Picture (tube, rainbow, N blue to C red):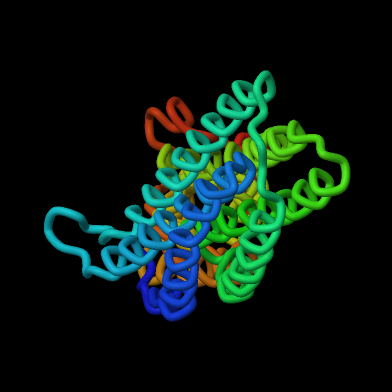
Length: 310
């Protein structure tokens, strides 16, 4: 037996903030590349590289949202929601590669720092910071609802930090004459970005590997199911996510009830999973006794193992 899908998470996500952020970021990216070349600043070029990944992330996010809205068909019965997770993983991998390149280039320049035009460097970085703050504001409301948007948000957030670093570096170089500060700032930006990139990549891979969604505890879910009245035990419990905010659950539930009592129990299970865990896609197989291979290839809680009938 399966739940109906009327209560599933709303599919639509606003594209307007992503479009505005993409236009602003891409426009300034061109200006920043020119500024980085003219001022000979690695920190500014690294900021421009992050701007490029911002534009790529925003563009991929928009494409992912469009594709993710396609209806399910006979080949993809869950639809195209998973494309958003692929986009998030792509954004994380792209940001990781850029950070590694900046670290390598900074190491090369530390031995032979070039002359840097701090005035132009400061102006360009300040404009970049302004653009980043606007983009961050636009993406803030949806960043916790979608890994895809979160990836784009992290790109912009890291670039905002990069702009701050370039501004600080330009001021220090202007008053001290230490050109190596430019490379040092670039290294700090790269080191700051890497851990956050890893976090996003890990979250994306967890969804792709059909792991338990972050924030859900399989033991707690199993115990909650087993404690529902008329449930004797639970096995073959699986919880995963198609994309951000779309968790699914399947389980074998042992009960003495027969039809139509099973329909009442199913409704109770669906309501409990929705209210307590925000899981709206629930598929339950009722059994009079546990199937032969119960627990052989799946999780089973201590409550289920005890076989405590209600």
